Image (cartoon, rainbow, N blue to C red; front, side, top):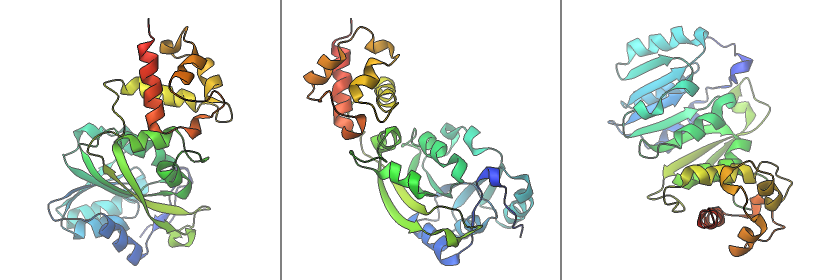
Length: 268
């Protein structure tokens, strides 16, 4: 099997049989499941997934790895290999429901998670390996340095759980950082009700965290959001019980939703 990795693709191959089996167990795979694997690599996890008899779609961008994956595809009728860039997939086209079970390439992990969290109605279970740093940002609580816009985005529609921390020596070649397996499951309803203003809600959050060391007041005062034009930002914060000295990392989703509601109420 081809062993050399491509550094720019963030390749760290996982071949530990016990851990591969554990990932599949976390996915609670059933025979009639549809599974999406992003970053099939050398096919170690792919093989475990197809042996479950579920229908598996595996995506891989590296030309050098495709021949071995095609051999696997010819062997298993329940496997489809997509040779391409996973960040350019149209996730809306996937079968409903689909489970995502992957050892995500480091370079695209955050982008892929952010994108698939758009579709809780399609992706009914997500079990992925990521850098521990990224996993901690997804599962973070308010008040810590990991908490930010990625946290609020993923937690808006998905519940999360850290399942396992994976040391570097489990990979070939070993990365310089620890990894983690996390599970995301769709909430029955979003964590806050935004009454159709989700786009503005996340624009507000992104702006609130744009300079993490600055207060929420300063970030909002200096924003270019059109719906904040001519607003008394300090007054808005006071009306919803937010101190002007707080940073965005101190606020949970409820306060951002209250703030947006107050902004909309004061729009001209």
